[in-house]
Length: 464
Ligand code: SF4
Ligand code: SF4
Image (tube, rainbow, N blue to C red):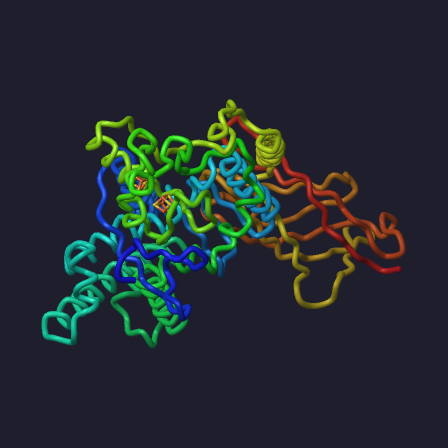
């Protein structure tokens, strides 16, 4: 592509006549939208990098421990049996994205997608720093192999590699724990093969995508890019060219006074990271990055014309109608509220204790005689997971007064998230039906005067 003026009417700006990829080299742009996005990107990157380093009471504030099936979100611990809440979170996230898309269009793509954020805020800056502006980069790409070209390409990819490694290590820190990861980093790779290979693969993918594949991911691979048009309607915000105001363009106008505000300078095309011409209408390749708005506003200011020839608007506003929040946005918002309310109610009822009774090895029951009465005993290893403050005490009570719970370890002082102890369940044969009984138990956690009780059940067995 020698010039963006040669954009083909039926071909993407990022492909040549043989369908080969032409990597866009967007011009630099400045303006209010660029400044706002830069600020927001910096905030998002800072959150991403800092969050896994926040520790409260010695515990990582956000940690997704998959092998232990323990997920710490902002200090709250969830376990595998809490996966119902994960479903709520995922559903809520999808509905939130659907709602945002229906109202603000592809705000996610332009403002929060990691692909856009990292490429625009870091990788393009490295590219510009090493190889210069778009004109110099294109010239360098066209130039024959030379020491300067090799040096610049090597430097650029070396810096990309350093950044990619940092991004990937931060990502792994959310799963492995950042302090743990620092320790692992000083060990030989052979001691953590799985992690090492995962890190290499993720770094390779990051380098490939953020360094080279870029807009092709948005155009070809991103599933959200495909179905976002289904979520949007004529009220959704899009970055659009005001055709009524811009046409006919100055270089095609037949007579003075006929011309619109577009001077056909192609600045909006030259800054576009996906290589499209927004004057051809809303397109699937547009990631709503607002670059063309800033570029055109700058031209309009120079031409002493009002800004906003390209702007955030809606299909309705472009046809002179008033924009309103569409019916599908209300539907998404209502479903989101229902899902969030369900999650809040579920969490408020969530017990902080979970118990698992494992029958001890050996015979399932033992007969004893006490005060000339024949009794039976079942032995269980009890594993409990306790969420919340340590230092409280745990005890177990039978809900049937004819059944006795005996344990030398109870009441137990809770000092860890997972505790285990042995209980003996002592009962008379007459309580059993066909040799079995489902016995209701009460787990009681005491913290000073406050008491939390959780009901559970254990299956006991005896003679028929
Ligand atoms: S930047 Fe504005 S004036 Fe220039 S071609 Fe694009 S729409 Fe027309
Ligand atoms: S058309 Fe404008 S908003 Fe859309 S991707 Fe290109 S520069 Fe960004």
